[in-house]
Image (cartoon, rainbow, N blue to C red):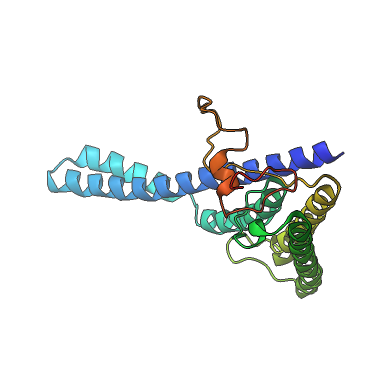
Length: 227
């Protein structure tokens, strides 16, 4: 069940990013193409080329009939949804950056307490946002408000807040429970690029530089390198 949820989360984020990218590309290309064709129309008229000018004008009018005004609004909506669910994905995979210089210098018992406190605080905060967001969406549903270009119901747009925050709250609790049981946190190597393999130079699998980094808290199972 968890693997299905993880996979669905990843697929949703990938689809949102891909769709937004295609929309932006199409919208920008359409805008610049109109400008180029308009320049050709003027050029042909100035140089007394009526047939070419007529063809360019026909292409310009045909391209102008394609309405992509809505693309910008939809792209913004897609990025909002991507950000909310991407934040939950970041909690699960350990992508979020935190400054934990002091926590990493504590002994294991105190470090465990503060890490669990931070994860619990994150779960509480995102849980509150989810509840408040659900209440806001309920008000928007009864207000019958719609978006200006797409004319989508605004409650559907803002549904990203309670859904994304609920998933993020769940991920905080998931990481906290796993950490309480195993003493391990999800790790993400910010210097790693998928598909690029580097030769082993005697650095352990987590990376010596990573273990000394103040960007993420140390696991309880990690051996501190600076002692």
